[in-house]
Length: 551
Image (tube, rainbow, N blue to C red; front, side):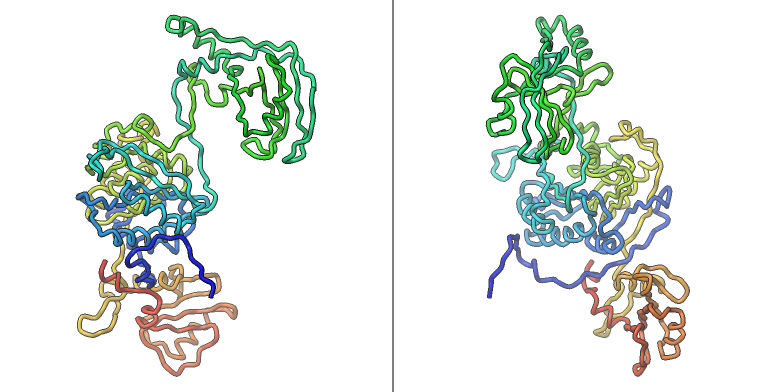
């Protein structure tokens, strides 16, 4: 037999529980819902694995950006989480949630996970397995507020966290740039001005090896280049800056081309020193792919224009820089982090500026954002201020004392965090949901399962629809549908031949019906398009209700 294997992380208990988890229903608590109820925003109180399972059917492939900040399993005593889990238990906890999060992401969407160096490398291998290794985007080092003291070695101060980024399919992102005022060291490099190009003469023409398009090399005569003097800069700063602003579109520096760049070196091999050349061609790849492009060369070096990496704002030149994988305090101001959102969450609260950067990169206004370890509510607060839709999941009483309090305040127009930069004036709203208990529970005296007495009949119908993969939408005799041609009916009544025949009148020849009941006539002959299942027997065959009892 051929032996096949795959690269994966294994741990005690990884394969012990393969039973399908019960998909719970969500019950709105209208007294806790706040603001506009029609926004589609959801705040869910309950175990996040069960809550994610509850979302799986309706939201698979719909979430554009997921940010989670799970317990780090560091052994530190968190006030709101049991963060000292045995390692394999922690791995199991994360793995089961990542599998559902991957399903919830839409194509092009991304997952961002905050973690520290204790579990980061295990998590990386696990994410490679769930998302695919080619889906890895970046590993961000984030300088956090304060420090956690000395690391395990007792030698290095632990003042950073990691953010692992994975995409589902091709990562769809917005490129954002850091910016800073134009510095003297940059001015020293970009102080050449192309005053005029003069006239050009074609000196070489050939076809590109990559796409067969023509490449034309021109030599210029009568051109003029001057250098802006930076002498006595401290005393002449205002004068020099004005000159840079006036000549902004024509400022450049020249770069040596790397030896490995065969195309560029071939272009430059016959160029004379102190001469200006331009090359016109159509690139086969890169940002100018399939576009007619013009490159400038001077003194056998390639032009780099200041305007390509800077812009003018308030009559000042601002230099832009690509974001790196190290995010420091300087680039993400913390401001008054302790009081952000008006809730106290020591050592665990993430700054709104950090989440703002993530959502700027990974989403657009109107996109759906999810945080299933909501903590103090930062992700949803920022999403609200940035015009994103959101779903937040949190367990324990601080879903009420932290998340709800903070989000209510955001809707009322609170002004901490990113509010001023976003010109946030308040508005919006959300629905507050409780995770329903398990549909089936063990009988207190007999070794059988029964319908949970906490359930109303409407809740029973909705839960059975969810378990069977139907959309719950009561209409006439039916509780819901899974397609235009398949319907479900749930009843307390005895189902006999007459009952079935009456229901059969409501469906067409090409339609089908699933009936769920507690008892039915055993000797019935059913039409081919009608199926009967029994409560609770056939529900127990669909998924596991044991975890529901333990949650």
